[in-house]
Length: 390
Image (cartoon, rainbow, N blue to C red; front, side, top):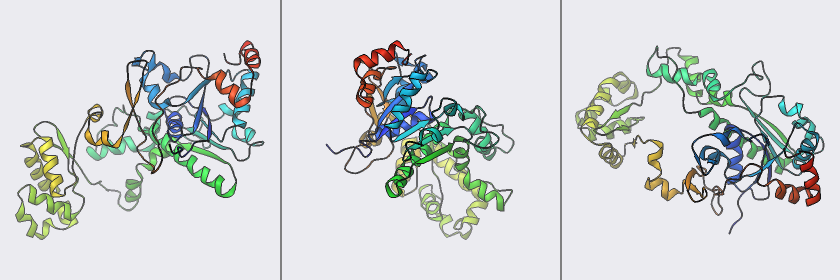
């Protein structure tokens, strides 16, 4: 079997919760050996998240499948020394504590890179490592509020609408994706130039990147209103039919029985359709209202019009497209299997799928430290007596 693309890369993972853990989960999926270093006092808070199967949090599993778990008391000298020894044998460090925490522990980039100049060290935080807001506690909703994403989203739907009651933590995923991407860039830099890197990922700036288009357009037109791609009601749900070019408008006119618009100049230019947007969308809505979502999707797709049914996430578990793509992986769950997501990308000739196991808290401590640091059973017993592992 072909080696995974990052096989042989070792990652010291000091992450908790979602943003950092999602970055290192992707590294594990690509074949890196990810050693998750957790507090002996309960470990990553995500371990306690509900629901659980056989005492395994399925949320923790989503972001930490395929990693090895060790426990270290980083407040004690022996635990910190083991962490330093692990970092010295790692290619990558990832952490997402509040800025300054790793420095107080003596595990910051400036300290550990002195003897390890090719190290890649990624810090993911709410507002980054510098700037007036860097020390703020910043979970995903804070990054959403600061970035303009939430208010822009609600105001584009209704000018005086309040910000949404945000329940999907986009900022966590964005922070993890940017962290993962930056690590790949740093690996290329090390390959080409022999240099390590410190990576400073800001979740807030990641969210700002999602509103780059309105930020640019508002500079030229303060009254800017984004293109509107509504959800069209069907007999049993909703479909999305984004008409983005004159060609897609013309294809849709034929489907909805408005062939007369094909020869009307007012319906065949972008300025024209913008002026007639209400009329066109009303005609599309009348057409979808008499059909099921499946019928609308199939008819529009055959005609060449971009289309999708609106699904709930759990409805995708059995979707033929997702199944054929191998979009999901199954975790054993001690006899009660459950599903996690695979990475949304593939590489030819190799695998980037999750390793389908979830390590218990500290389950790999002795094996990993014995193998990586060459510690004997007697040495491990001595460290355990010193409470290095909690």
